[in-house]
Length: 356
Image (cartoon, rainbow, N blue to C red; front, side, top):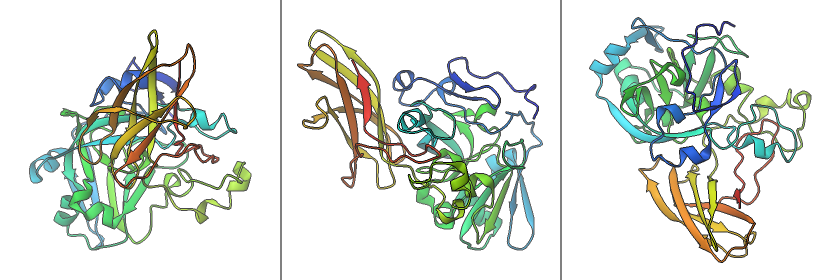
């Protein structure tokens, strides 16, 4: 694959892989901003990053074997712009921590592969209704525009119910934080699926297909799945991929971004990511492995799809120690102490951890 014509990438990111370009910021930098600035939005790629001109088109394939094509300018004029704040999260967030339990397969992401942004674009439900498609079971997204490591194209799908409901806020986005998308983040068009892992937020989308089946693409069927902990090798996994569901929503999570110590206290700051059952209502901290929990102060949360920023000052601590965090959501679900190990190293959500 040719990586020679990639646009410049943000110098504020720590590079995990150069080709394809995969990089993340520090969590400490992230939590300084309610909305993540462009230069701190992580980059997850499976091939070269490309730039496209104004001839770019999105094709909606209907059940009548008709293709309806939209240019970006048509999307911006035919449909009202919708804007939502939603957190984008890589399935491999905190994979390096899971890898300390047993080796895993994938980029050794730390805790910076998440970003909370304001997305602007066309509601997918509006686009589907305008195109006259009939109800099916799945809406499949594809990008043939750029090459991939493991497939001829990048593909993903979401259930019809998620796609067609206005209150699910699924977008074909052309803006991020009130600015046009950049090439690194899917320009000119990307999918935004609030509440779902980033693997379904297809960048450089150029095709939408209504189908009774999930996308057959590698990244839907053979990747981003949680296999049982007993499956420890790729060989053992080979016959099992089709037996386990594709990931959708990720788990309730919290991360300690940094800990600062003064004479007899620590100041702790971090973020929380909602799970599938409502946004976060509280984040608690413990310095004694869960015997005692202390409340934090929520300093930012916006709507049902955003992350939560929180901070706390804990007094009476010693010269060195460990602090853990756990998030609690609107239905009272609590982040578990231990994350479930799996071969792909996805969906890790054990207690957040920090040291001083």
